Length: 455
Image 1 (cartoon, helix red, strand yellow):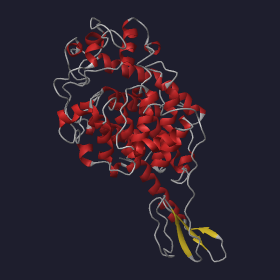
Image 2: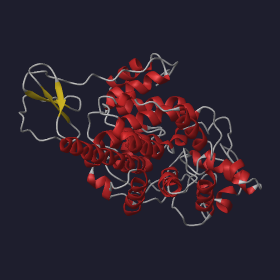
Image 3: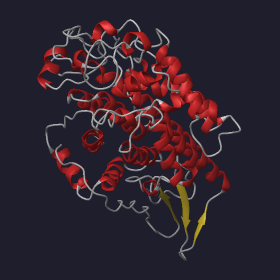
Image 4: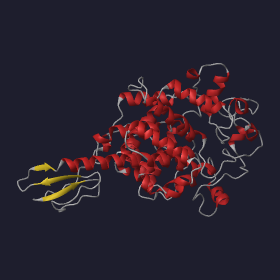
């Protein structure tokens, strides 16, 4: 994956609508690869399709208002299905990769979990030789001493024992199959409920997230014992709570160590923001025009603010906007491969070609957490496995090793949006430990931003 990023180039244009202009026939202007001609005047209106009567003289008249309403209702059902797919896809991608997070020796994945590696939800192995967690700073960010007490006293209560030198514990030691890691729980348990609550307030306006409400939930969740079972917290969280313990107010606690903070885990909060936007603009786009979606200035500013509430980064917001646009386009029905190449083009002139070349390689990319390499790797997986079953794509990412958990969350959201909830593996959905809670959170979220449509 060396060099798989570069300078900005023009965006990929959406493919044209498909038409067969035959006299006295109905042409279905529909999703890519699904044009149908000669359906006859008595044809019913398919989901999300627009029927146009092509007259002998070449004039076109749109069919009945009833058919348009049916198409609108079908489109509404489609966006809800894709939003729900993105939500459960995010959680499934995280949970599948959880037991092999930061395995940099791929052979060990297959030694520990069998010939096919990760194929279903698993628990981490009890011993993990070479764990970097046992070299990490328990008093702040990055690597350092295990004498600090942010871990154990302020956050991750009763879990400092797993951070001590020589411990050789996996980063998610003791977690159950199908359980979500801390950063994905921040999205489902904190950010999404906060956004749902804020949507019903008079002060929401054009803002998406109420900073004070979100940070209040964040601080309470992390500093209250037994709110979660994860034993690992990334550098951004440890630095935030080192500042918090030092007396700073939550709004001033975000920090950066100059090395580990500009990481792909900082992009997860973009996922529900994209879900919200896709529901709000669904009526303005068709699958053929979805590639034209572009984040506005207000979108970009809000993405930057939300990312920087719990970390301080100038690098992540740019990647956040690209991730946001990719997710929204796919939720609006854009072809996944075309959407990936459009996003790659926004990152670098030669990146689309590199993505295509990397996808032809039999070997999948392994990267660390740093966003400049891990995000292009995400694009490779999304492009390479665009036509694969949902589970196959996420297992391939998990079995690639490296920073596969937060990449898995983002990839799961993208693949879930592309497949829709109906295309997400049902066993993976039901196998999530927090399935009922995630479904309730999603239902409330969809009700807030797409009233009348339910999970």
